[in-house]
Amino acid sequence: MFIQSKLKHLLVLMSFSILSFSTNAIANDEVLSYPFNADSGRYWQYVSDRVMGGVSDGKVNIEQDGEMYYARLTGNVSTANNGGFIQLRASVSFANSEKDGKNLKGVRLNVRGNSETYYIHIRTNESWSPSDYYATTFKADENWQMIDLPFNKFERRWSKNSTLDPKKIRSFGIVAYGKNYLSDLSVSTIEFYY
Image (cartoon, rainbow, N blue to C red; front, side):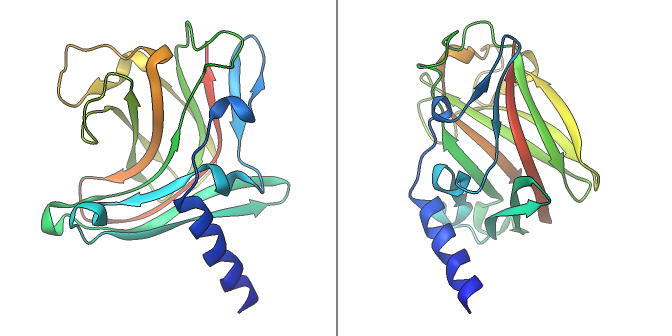
């Protein structure tokens, strides 16, 4: 019971918190790194298609494997009722980073999953609605792996001719999306690289 109570408390905290990536970054000349830790849950928010009448169901937990912490997004993605997503999302700001987001080339993730395809959704200051975002996909296999997702591979949902400007990023989402399936995705580190 105690563990269930703590997990419920963590999920409530995640539902009402926002991450400013500038607060806990490990920076060098090549990357801005954001490893998950025991306190990461307060910076992230779980969102599903239920906000728009969908029926997808999921959860996010911060888990630990030895010294490594990671976020684990699990659930049932359903396209019923025009739905079809669960996600882990945070607000982003590079305002306090040394390079202010200039010249960022992409994002690198350390992931493990169930061999399904997942998405990264990025919103910018130019996004005009919740469904206006830049996206790319990646596959997460059962073993931990680092994957690079260059920003020039992200496409804007409503305008294919638009280019993602990293200085204007305002939210970052890790998403199980678009089809009926079971999600089981773990992410231990997010790095924005130059």
